[in-house]
Structure formats: structure tokens, C-alpha cells
Image 1 (cartoon, helix red, strand yellow):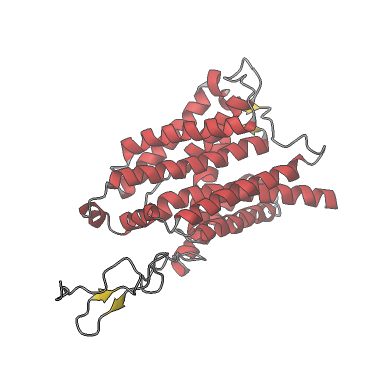
Image 2 (cartoon, rainbow, N blue to C red; image 1 turned 45 degrees about the horizontal axis):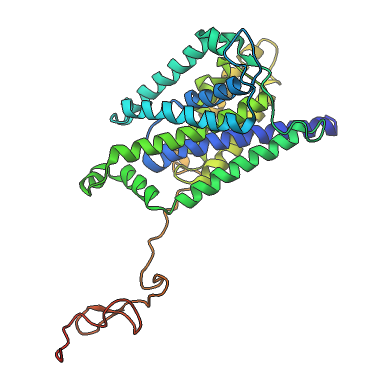
Length: 351
């Protein structure tokens, strides 16, 4: 392979890795933070992709389109569509738990895929929607792939940093508490259903952004691209391998699994004649074996979740307030002179 071919391959590899890392981060919000078993990742992946295709392509009599809108408008439109559909799905299904929630999300994802297949006047059916414009393609002729890779990495970095910032927030702490003991959170007076819906919507919107980038990268979408094997199974393997509940683990798992998935493509090309028709099944089998090994040998993933440590008020007092001091005789706390708290709990005898 000459240098130009290697550069093209690596641009393709890291672009797809970044897109799958975004999908893995979205699933991490749902499963890693809140414990929601969403097996319908491919559905929201497809919604983001098709919303982008419809909004950005020129007019065509074979499918709904002709809006020819800029990329940023398509991003906003895909976010709105994914958020609305995720809200409706959440209201219908998030009262379910465990296996029942998993089954319902599988069914919804299949409904979406079958709608995309059969609604030919809207989605183009099995023919799909071609000619999706790629952003930044006119900056330097012949370098659209490189600039798009930079765009994917920017999206990934923004999402990663936003989720990393949220990880120490009260919102995520409540999510993690729901995952650990939902009844205790409910007993504390929190609206558990609301928080579960919020996590589901946020995760689904992130998955939709992955679909936006996928559609503009491939410049073509069709229902076959959102088969559960590629749109759901691989994403779950990435998150479990990297470490659920951990944003770094989610992105690391995407790099590792997409690398292994690409390697299995090369390995199956070495199979003897007559086995080439079974290469797809063999690739899935090899990834499945890897998943089983991870679950047996390292169920917490390569990078386990590290919950944030609680802040010690004695070590990190709020700005402008001195640390509290424990009284040796009464056990009460007092603040240093100039603090906001009274110096003692005992009444002043001179008053």
C-alpha cells in the first residue's frame, strides 16, 4: 500500500473510531450512569443520520428533501428530532426495568429501521439517500477527509469534556445513586422517572450526533447501515470492554474494538475459497468471543469506573469561609474569627 492509500485508510479508520466513540459516550450516559438497558442504540443513530440527510440534500422526487440547509442547521435539527423521539420513547418505556426495558428498546429500534425501509417516499426505502454534502469539503481541494476527521475529533472532544464536567455534578450523582439503589433515591424525595428520562434523552441526542457525522462522512445512508449488529452490538461491546460509567473507558473501548473489527476484516480475507461468504459471521463470532473473555476475566472493563471522592469540608472550605474546628470538650464545631458561623454553640452568659 502506497503512502496516499495509507493516509486515506487512517483517516477513514480514525473518523469511524471517533463516530463510534461518540455513540459509546451516549450509551455510557444511559447504562454507565443510570443503569438503563438501551438495546436500541441503532434507532437513534439512524434518526440522526436520516434527519441530516433530509435537511442537507437537494430536491429529489424519490425521497423527502430539497431543504439544502447548512450543516450546522442539520445538527440542530437532528438534536431536536432525537430529543423529541427519545422523550416519547422514554415516557412509554422507562417505567420498565431490566430485561423488559431491553426488549422494548429493541422493538422500537426495529420499528424505526423498518419504517426507514418501507417509507420510500420519505426515506428512499432500500435505495437510501445519496449525495449528502460533507462539511469543510471546499477548504482545500482533495483534503475533505482530513478536515472532516478534525471535525469529528472536535465533536468528540466537546462531548467528552462536557460529560467529564457533568460527572461531578449533583445531576450525575443522582443518576449513579439511581443505578445503585433506586428505592433509596425515591425515598429521599427525588423524582426518579424524571431523572431516568433526562438521562435517556441526553444519551439519545449524543447518539443522534454520531448519526449526523456518519451521514456526512459516508455521504449516503440506507437502512442496512443501521443493522443492530453494527449500530447496537458493537457499541455495547465497546462500552463493556472499555469500562462502563467511565468516559475514558468508553472512548478507549471504541478505539480497541474498532481496531479489532478492522483487523478481523483482514483476517477473514485470508480464509480459503468457499469461506468468504461466511466472513461476516466469523467476524461477529470473534468479537463475541472477545466480549465473553472480557466479561469473565475483567467484568469492570479495561478502565474501571472511579467515582469522584466526596469533598471534605475541613480540607476544602468554601471561598471566604475558614475551616470548621471541632471542640475538644463538647464535640461542637466552630469557625475561625472572621467566618460566617458563630464561634460557639453555647450561649453567651454575659448576654
